[in-house]
Amino acid sequence: MAKEVNIDLPYNYDPRPYQQPFWRAMDSGIKRAVLVWHRRAGKEKTCWNYLVVQSMLRVGTYYYIFPDAKMARRIIWDGMDKEGFKTIRHIPEELVEGINNTEMKVSLKWGSKILLLGSRDVDSLRGPNPVGCVFSEYAEQSPLAWQTVSPILRENDGWAIFNFTPKGQNHARDLFEMAKHNPLWFAELLTVEDTKAISKEEVEKERAEGTMSDDMIQQEYYCSFTLGVEGAYYAKYLQQAKDGGRIGSVPHNPSSRVCTAWDIGYGDSTAIVFYQVAGQEIHIVDYYENHGEGLPHYAKVLRDKPYIYDTHYAPHDIESHSFSSGLSAKEIGNDLGLKFVPLPTLKLRLEDGIEAARSIFHRVWIDAAKCKFFIKCLENYRKEFDDKHNVYKLRPVHDWASHGADAFRYLAIATRLYVDADKSGISDKEADRMYNLHNPRFG
Image 1: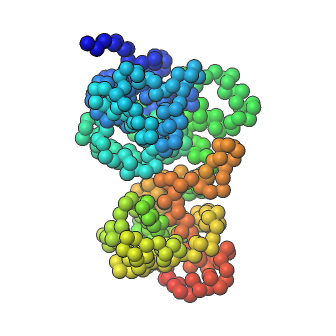
Image 2: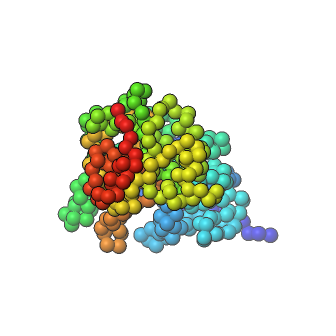
Image 3: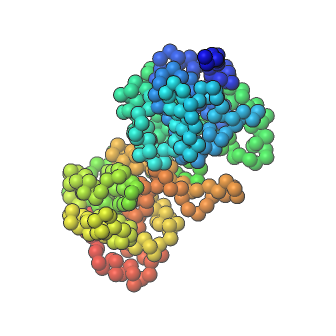
């Protein structure tokens, strides 16, 4: 006869006083929570233990989701606290049926499964129907992750927790603002003054040693949303556009043709920016992005919109990349009525394209309603950080935000090449050839 084992849950974890309101709220029946807690406030230990407890109360699949799988492995799977206690061991060994190290999956003896995942590939979140999810560092995740999982949790009467430290006024901040005024959600913002988990002396030491800037201290320890995403390419320009009233209602002018700029994904997301040129102004009136669809899908999207089109711009590789049919995207587009004009992006360095985008920003107007996700892409498009050398790399991070940002970069190149006839960075011969090949009408 098997020996009965008594284990108290949560295991090897006692909530600190400031963490207890979250536990009480969830125990009262709340199904959604947003935790905006300062650095080192114990977000992961709290959320991980809550998920473990819930996995023992209801048989089902549970997701713990990070921006990418590497972070999940580093923080939870291989992580440990300052006493050397491994985070994964908050699941008592006596209750574990099996562990899959490759997939970062724990199977429990009564049937529940816990999976650690990254949200960079949103499609990986489909499949097993989760009944509980933690979105960790949600400010760095794609908003599409929650859009993908939300219907599943509603159907399963499941729960979701979002934890993060602010990274500017992005989708995570919007979620927190909504949750504050929604009685069905628990929302909490805790600074070091609220928790006393880190002394003022420690914070001042980091400031004095130059480890963190004043802005970063306000963000990481006082949960300020004003700094924005570190290394962001367009944050300053977006703020100027907001201050200047150029992000708001920007209606489509039916008497003017619409151009589009595409970032075409091959096994990845495809992003389309819809815009009109009015004199020196560039009016971005619409945006569309999807994943895992072929060109016929996007052709239908364009047909269903009430626009008369002028030109569809795409990067140079539209002429070379092929789909399963063996035809290039340009050839398929032609068959579907999409006459693409390839941009000579091969001849431009990435940083030149980004600079072209910055240079036209003062002329850009963006419709806030139809381009909400596009604006988030621009806010979160940032340089990649080299942790080893503590410097930013020249290349941007390739994540959910890069598709919309790349489409905007192509819009800028098309504007400089065809509207402004600015040939910098491109040979005169190539620019003349491209300009004479197709000089679209605007207005």
